[in-house]
Image (tube, rainbow, N blue to C red; front, side):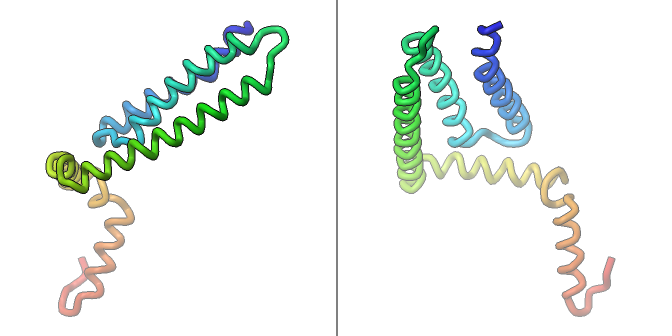
Amino acid sequence: MHQLQIWGGPVGGIFVLGMGYILVGKHRRLILDEILAGVALLIWIVVDRVNDSLFGGANPDLLKIWSVRGGLLAVLIIAYAIARKQWQRRAGNGLIRRGLVRRWRASRNRVCDRGSAAGSSLVGGLWRRSRQRQRPGKENI
C-alpha cells in the first residue's frame, strides 16, 4: 500500500499532463512552455524518487530531502529562463519566426474559418452584432 501512495502523485501528474497534451494537440500545436512543463515533471519525478531512496526510509532526513527539492526547483527555474531567452533570441533573429509563426497563423486561420474558435463563440457573435449596430446606414441582422 505504501508503494501506491508513493507513486500516486507522479502517476497522476503524468496522466493529467498526457491528457492535457492530447486535448491541446487536437486544437493546436504545443508551445514551448507546455513542452518544458512535461520535461520538468519527468525530471522532478526522477529526482524525487532518487532523493527518497537516498534520504527517505524509516528515519527520513527531511532537511536533506527538502534541500534537494529546493535546489531542483531553482535549477528548473534557471533552465526555463535560459530556454525562453534562447527561444526568443532565435525568434527575434527570424530563424524560428519565419516558419513557425506562419504555420501558427495559418492553423489559427483554419480553425477560425471552420467556425470552432472566436468566430462562432458567443462573445465573438455579440461583438460582431454590436459593431454592426454602431455602423450608420447598416441594418441590424
